[in-house]
Length: 435
Image (tube, rainbow, N blue to C red; front, side, top):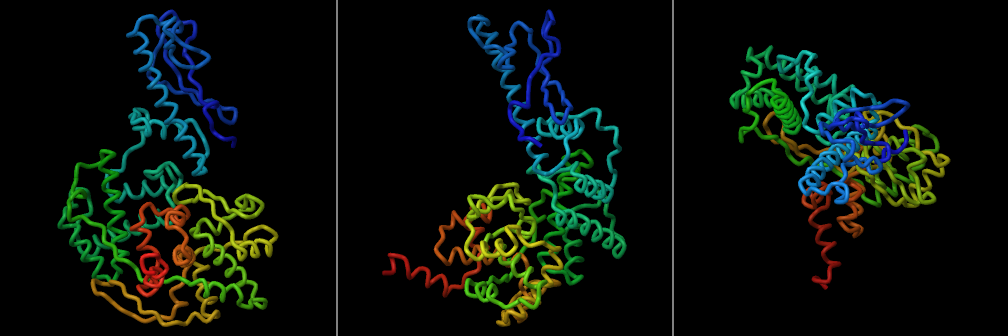
């Protein structure tokens, strides 16, 4: 599909020969089709500038000041429609949702805050569980987008399914109702306690409650119920910092030099993982790289990230360039995240990452500490954390790293990277203040 620009969006009069004010249409042509919708604005053809496709504000033509101001107001409305349509079209294009007049109109009406009388034909779900089912179907199809106009990731949709299953089990085991009227702050506390008593981790419980709050809020905004208990100050998302690890620059070098000539499977897993470690991309991005993502004569990797839609450009180091050369410029073929995590543990155990690490988490309401070998904790996300931490330790400016990782604040970024107090002290020794 060609790039969507202002030239593909036009404003046309409904009747250019009308003797009185006529409607102004917003028109977008695509794939030999035409999307047309009313802007709700009217103007006399004599006051319409067909070349600019705007209401005329030329004092020579519109001598009355009030007339010019009225036309300026019309133009402001037209600009709002143009901007909203371009945003919708680019969001749909980015989310790889096929254009259709129905889809464009639905998202444009949402963007403009217009209610659609014709869409009410579909019966609205009457129960919360039915709402979750419909939400999941719409999220899968792309009919429902996130607040940032992006398609919901598969892992996010799976979280909604887990919430529904948890509510159903809670109802079966306790007999408590799970309709909109049953949801109170007492229900929240009892449901949270029930989840905790099942031995779930604090972060898992927190993720379920976060989705619970989101869906209650959205269903409320859609007029399906009048229960506002989700706004209660005690309805909080639970979360704790996880004891994640990273691989140091020395460990990454050790991994890259590991002889895997006898094991093509682990060699490919190693190469994929190293691409993540040296680019900071999420698994969903570094596992889907294409030759066209490599620009500037093979020196820069440029990609729009799937999660945020933001474009990142990352310099490629010699290790990445050697990997790309090994595969004739095409990034290694990928596998599922789950299988790669399994193979990563096998790979890193073979590499000798057996350092014993103490990790803690809250499970079943109790803080648990356990000692594990480092290879047991390595996942695809370790690559991204390793990139951020190693870049920070190497003295790369924080703002430059955040441009790649996508962190919006330095405080969140500092919680994300993993450096010990000793490493921090050694970094500070290089500062002029300590010389």
